[in-house]
Image (cartoon, rainbow, N blue to C red):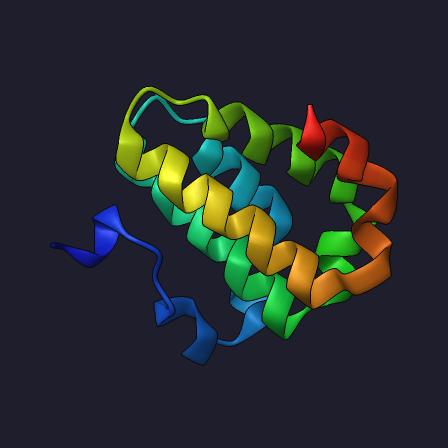
Length: 104
């Protein structure tokens, strides 16, 4: 399976200044499913390397991820679900305010 189709740790070695939440969200809004997966992987990596940047945009990030959880392409929805878990693990209590959205 190609790394574009799965959860990727390839961003963990990149300098987080090269990545931004806005770029990841832009990729997630693309019509191309591979871009969506790339954006989700960027959010996962940013939540590990720069959790404050994700926390500062948490509402927008959660809404975008939840939209991708409903994606009919299973490779996108699977990565979106894993991304929620990664964010919850890396942001700890900062995500508590958004958990109601995640549960519904």
